[in-house]
Image (tube, rainbow over all chains, first blue to last red; front, side, top):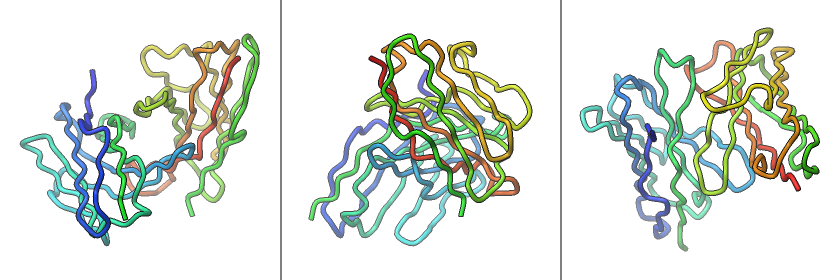
Length: 113
Length: 117
């Protein structure tokens, strides 16, 4: 049972344009969501997070949007840069979940020069 | 700050042997450490959660006698894969949460690539 889903395994975007990565979840108990960036053979690095009491959080070029009614979140990167090429994972957790994170399958983002 | 290291980064072993992987929080005290496994082109799957000084909590389907976890201090957790078999070949990643840190923010180690021949 995949509670967190990233339905696009890959995404290709032109440098300077906006990258939009999507994530859906099924567990209504999730109340905190995170995005991680991962390079091959490395551990994920934290990018940005959002609590369920908010619908938007912004940090520099990265913005995360949360639509609770649709159980959907998205990560916007603008402008996209070649260094953004990596695999992006969304993750979710619940207050009752003892800080456990449930990860999506990841989306491989490629930024073309 | 909030750096997590893993050792070794890569290990190749023969089937039937045991392998120990260390996870250290270098500049903070980790209240909780997590162990994940990632198969190629798949998501990170949580294997177990460990708190310093107590037994690890394993996720459903993870054999606790095969994947031994020891969390001896607030900065060190070890995962021992006992009697490893080729199907145990995977990328093992640990993470740690910081005492007093941002809710649910986990800091990940660089991972250990295990290949069992």
